Image (cartoon, rainbow, N blue to C red; front, side, top):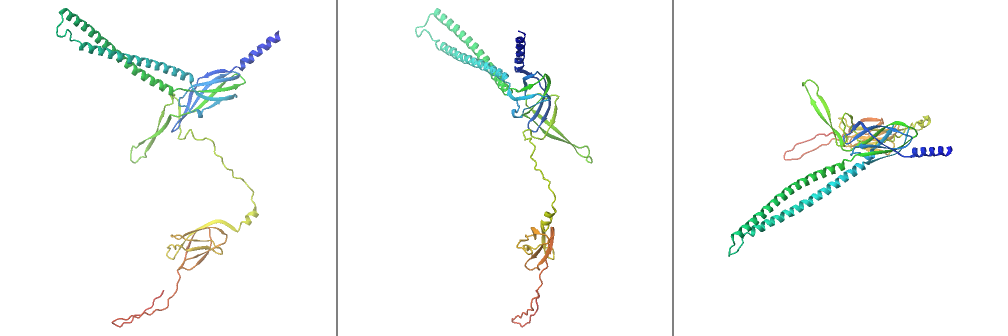
Length: 397
């Protein structure tokens, strides 16, 4: 009997520990990082957790919460099974029911307003009929008593008709006023629907009873800051003093009073994944490979070709001696050569100038060409005209 009782107690303890425990945690804002567009909220909460699985709800979070940005951290050795963010459905259903009640009241008020409007039309028609039917007796006339009774009847009925019209008009004014008030209240309810707070629900598993400090981090959308500058100067001889002011705005539905604010020029939605850095592999020095490549010099040479007056020579030919690799200078006399052997020479030539050969030197080179000199034979020019004259001379080229 005792063994059965002990087994039953153990089973009850196991079932009790296996049941899901639910806790609603109260959070407070610890810090806010404000970006030029958006903000990062950090909330903290202390929760006492029992052994087993516990569902913790962090309620009252911003209605502008970005669900993809939610993070949950704990300072204890517990297992975090799941985290999800949803809107506060209880508040949403409450607002929806409140909205439905207002819509029903508004429709009922519209029905009364329509009925009173039609009833007012009825009494106005009756008033018109009473006024039209004032002629009685025709051409034969009517007795005095009959006339008095008819007038009394008409007066009494017209009075009743006017009283009814006044009552209905007052009711219509009040109903119109109530209808406008209901419309404004409906608009406020619609705003409440847009401002429903979020709840972050976490499922955790713990092996022991402990107090856990949680951090809830998330981004909000409708917030930010922008700078303005205040430039001041006391004297012309003194430096300017420039003060930067931060203008902060937020419509997150949360209160940031007495909260540590951090301003950032970054973007909370940028990818925070560190970049992949390509490594530089270390190797061993091989002297033989260096000697084999000693005859090649992977470099480039640049320069300018000019004449004796330092004027550029355009379209001169620059060729690596012994190869077919050549370039021409541009309109300003500049050239560039690449991939040549060490100890190579270049040959520079141009029409009207002496060809020049120089050894290649890495870097920038200025090459000056000398003009060709060639004497022309003496030329005798004889002219004939009305007056005989001799003209002779020599032209040296």
